[in-house]
Image 1 (tube, one colour):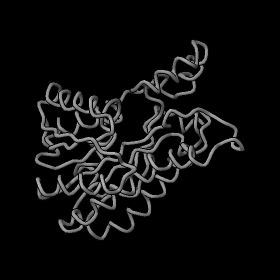
Image 2 (image 1 turned 135 degrees about the vertical axis):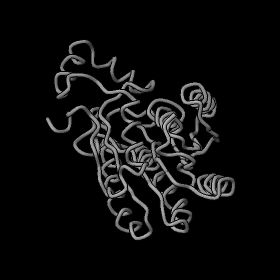
Image 3 (image 1 turned 180 degrees about the horizontal axis):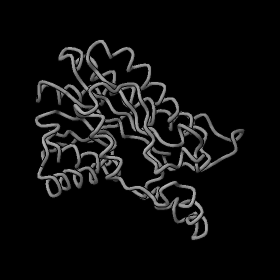
Image 4 (image 1 turned 90 degrees about the horizontal axis):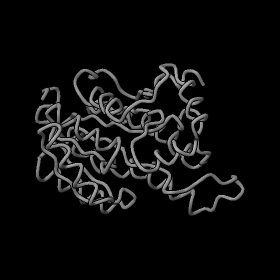
Length: 260
């Protein structure tokens, strides 16, 4: 175990599998006390076991719907009361909510709003809830997980997903300016396509062998990334190595966004 985040308290949303789980493991490996949340309670317990097995770390978990501000506030209060501080927030919760591409003139209001609720509103709810705690201690690091879709376009053609992830990048910049005077840094990652959960596996399979080869060829490093590689970038933003970095969005995508 490293000590770059020794005894720091970290909240990770969307922690039930994939990138969120990898972030929990890596933060714990760096010494953080991790509080994980997601709506998937069974998978969340698997994350707790992964943290113990892979990082010999500490992780507590609770089911939380990030779209419900009351649940978010209650969870943050629970963490703050137990730990007396919150040093890191990682807003990982997101996704397409099982939706598939529809022409923009056929997208129902409810579908549009659902994706915004998960990908953008959830980050707002958690940032709003932790801000008073971080302001009081005059320190903190918030890391938002956007997507390559937020910097260019959605590979699956889902308008709301691309728009919400772009909104998260804007939210990152705005809150970095607002919270900076309190010693709180806010940064963002835009991961490339990562095979990390059932949804991405389905998307990968749908490409077919030819499509998969073509996709990999469109990446400068000529390979897909891993959830662990996203998690390591989160660790950088969360620890003192990034003490003078705020308001930034970094693409962790092997050069995909650079190449267009």
